[in-house]
Length: 122
Image (tube, rainbow, N blue to C red; front, top):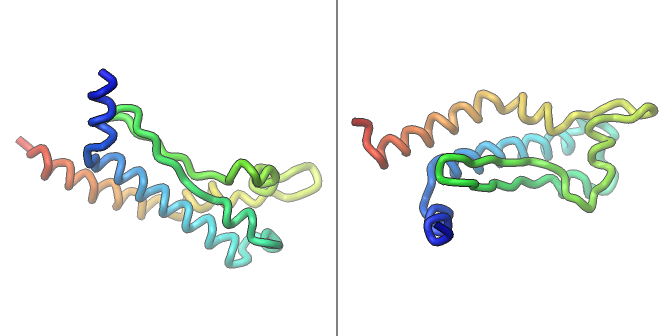
């Protein structure tokens, strides 16, 4: 079974590619929201913005999930995003995902079409 799982991870997978592309869209939008000053004064050194990244983890060939988040070394990212009792929230990740919903849907449609081409539709 382990060899099969390794083979699945090395095989081109339109679902994994779609999740990766969607994560890249959200990641770029979150960085742009911070860079543009939308959440001013969210930028001081750029450490938070530069730590935004994504990860795509395939569980099987039919189950893939992606995570966009702030690097572990930037402990204050959660406080900037969710706010505190003394600081308003700046939900750059949630807003980025909402802003890119339409593009994410298009991405999944494009990759689904590739899947149908690979495996046939009949």
